Image 1 (cartoon, rainbow, N blue to C red):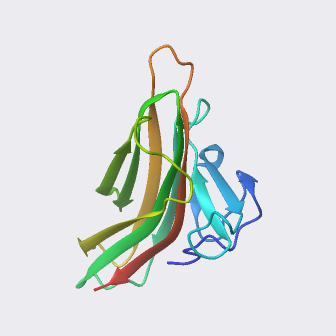
Image 2 (cartoon, rainbow, N blue to C red):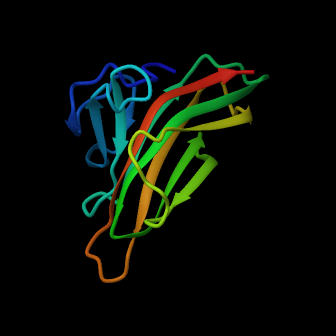
Length: 160
């Protein structure tokens, strides 16, 4: 994967370009703040809110060996949930959901609490696959919108 730690971006903020990654634009913030990063100086915030109910990043990965299995790994940090019943982090490989984790406002949510998602034994569909990481929230009753921050860093796809 190229730019796995999001170090090559166009600065902090909503809709900033992140080299080698496609984004859902409004649902993604790039950040250059090394104190909160898992590794390096940067990370991405998936930020579903009233205008964009899902934040997602994706990258096409080519030159893969379809005869071997792979491991997708990334670090995540759910740092904020407001006006949501729950929020779900998901990872997919060429459209196949391979990982989900659900968070609620009652979970212990705090910044700098990075967790590793490590998905092993992945069979590829072709020599080019798309890795996508998304985050969406369900709006709580009587709330106009839900919002949450899911920090993502250090995404790798490695052959076993």
